[in-house]
Length: 284
Image (tube, rainbow, N blue to C red; front, top):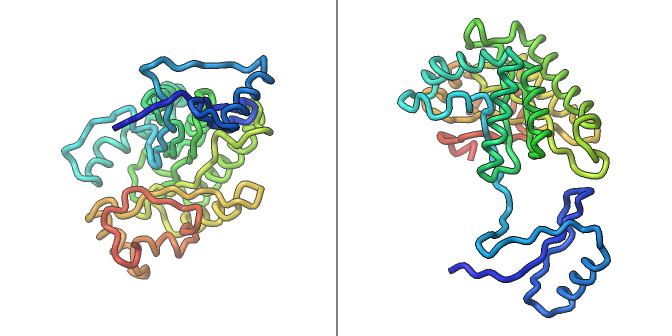
């Protein structure tokens, strides 16, 4: 059964932090202190919930492809690698048009928020300017997110691939630097609260990135954000059996799929991986 009682949550709007949570049905010193605190804040903005309303923590989505909002629910009849070729790559290639990206990304972020996702980890596309637009849309909506420009320099369509590992790495570095530099301009009160957007390093998955590119991205993630904190690495691991077999064929030097990332410096305490459906005992 679910029970409820009258309560009070105090939020410091300068920092976005919860200052206190109090059960007002409790006639304890804690409740008295909370009431006294409210009385000392005549300018406090008070929101009162109705009898059919309640509060809960926001959802955290650890893996979302923002551009795939454009064709969500499509191609569920196809296995992963065929689905990428028929639906995903053709659609994501359209995001070279920043105005198109802006329209899709605004809708994607709004949909996530409407369904209660207050923190999200987004893949963008290989297009740096469009992914910077995704960052702007997240900030405008007030969502918290990890956002990364996708890196791909092999095994991708001719119209949706980066020209070389060097160019792909340069674009990833520029994306990270631009996101960090634009925070002051795009996040009001940035100096008093944690960042809304953290730039992430995103090799799409091992089959679409050469070892040279993955090594460059590993170095970028370890370079960090300038405060001594590594940048998050967000990618895929063992989503599909055919994918796992393909990785093993391409990387006989690796003991397992995860070892491909490890050898390139991408496996560390800030790395997280989507799916992991077919991990072996070593990876677990």
